[in-house]
Length: 453
Ligand code: UGA
Image 1 (cartoon, helix red, strand yellow):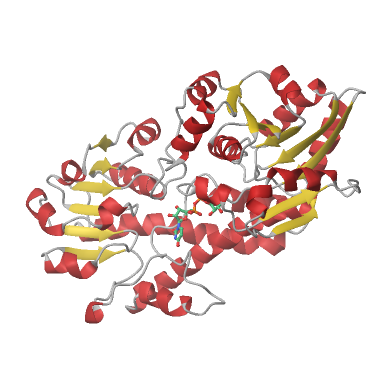
Image 2 (image 1 turned 180 degrees about the vertical axis):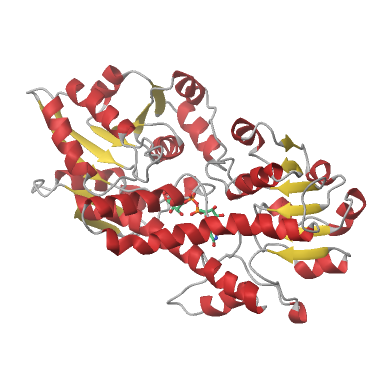
C-alpha cells in the first residue's frame, strides 16, 4: 500500500521506516528541511538501535522516501499517518497541539477524493473529533476525509521491535464509519503483524486516545509506587530491590517497571501524566486524576533525594568536590535527554558548587545543548579522575559492568552512589568502595543480587 507519515521525529521516522519494512511504499513528511535531507541520505537525527539498518535498507529498495512537499504528499497516497510531537505547553500542564493542527490545516485543503488520516501521536481525549471537524471544514468539495486513531506504544531503545512486534494494536474509528473501511485499510496495512496473532482491538476514537494516556499513566504510577515504598525503605533500613522481586512474583503485580531509583523522565511519561490531568480538569473529572499529582511529585522528589544523598556522602558540602556523573540520557540505549533525571541531578550538583564531569555513551552532544556549562568527559575513566564521588544515574550496560578495581586508582575518594540500584553492591564493597544507593540500602545477603527487568 502507499502511505504517508507526517512528522519524522522519533515516532514518525520509526513508523515510516517500519511500514516500508513491512513492504509498503512510504513517504515521510516533515517541515524541517535539514531533517528530511538527512533521513533521505540514511542519517537518523537520534540514536535508536537497529533503526539505521531498517532505514537504509528501505531507502535503497526504493520503498521509502522523505519530503517537505505537502502537495507531493497529498497526491502520493490516500492513507496518511499523523506522528508529530505533542509537547507540554510552556508554563501549563496541557499538551501543545499546534503541530497536529498544522498538519491538518496544511494537508486537508490539498486532498481530493477519499482519504484516511490515522493519528498516532499521544493526544488529549477528544482531539480526533476536533481534527475531524477541522479537516472537513478545511477541505474542498471533492474530498471525503475520515479520521482514525492508532496509538503508538513504542519505547525508545526498543522502537523497531515494538513497532514490528507490538503487544497489541489499538484502532479507534469514527462511529459514522459504518462500512468499516478504516478498519479494513488498517488490517491490510498491518496484515503481516496481525498474521502472527497480535491482538487487534477496534474501539471508538475517544477510547483509543485514552488507552494511550492511561497506559503511560499506569507505568508512571508503577514507578512512583515503588519509589514511594523506597522512601519507607530508606527510613526503615529495608531493601526495596528485594522487596520488588518478592512482590513481583505475584502475576497480578508483575516485576517490570518496579525498578526503584531516580525515577522516570523523557519526552513521554512526565508530560503525558500532566496533559492527562489537564484534560480531565477540562472535562470536569479533575478529582479522578489528582493522584497523578502525587505520582509526579514522588518522581521529582527522587532527583532532590539524589542531590541530598550525594551531599551527605561528600561530608555535607559540595563546595570543592569533584563529582563524576555516569549517564545523561533519560534511560539506557537512548541519546534522549528530554527531562532527563540524570542531567537534572548533574545540573543541581553544579549549582550547589560541585565540579561535575559527565559521561554518557550516546547523549553527550544532546546534553551539551541543554547544559553547556557542565564539563563533559570522553570516557568513564576521564569522568572519574580525582572524583570524590562516582554517581551512576543511567543504567547503561557499560556502567553496570564497570570494574571497581580499575577505577580505584583514578578517584580521590572511593565513594560510589548507585542512583539506579543497578550495580553489584557486594563487588564494589569488596573492592574497597563505600557504596550507597538511592532508595535505601542494597543488602548483600548470601550473595543475593536483586533483578532489574
Ligand atoms: C514510554 C512508554 O513505556 C511507551 O510504551 C510509550 O509508547 C512511550 O513512553 C511514548 O509515550 O511514546 P519511553 O519514554 O521510551 O516509553 O521510556 P520507558 O521505557 O517507559 O521509561 C521511562 C522512564 O522511566 C525512564 O526514565 C526510565 O529510566 C524510568 N523507569 C522505567 C524507572 O525509573 N523504573 C522502571 O522500573 C522503569
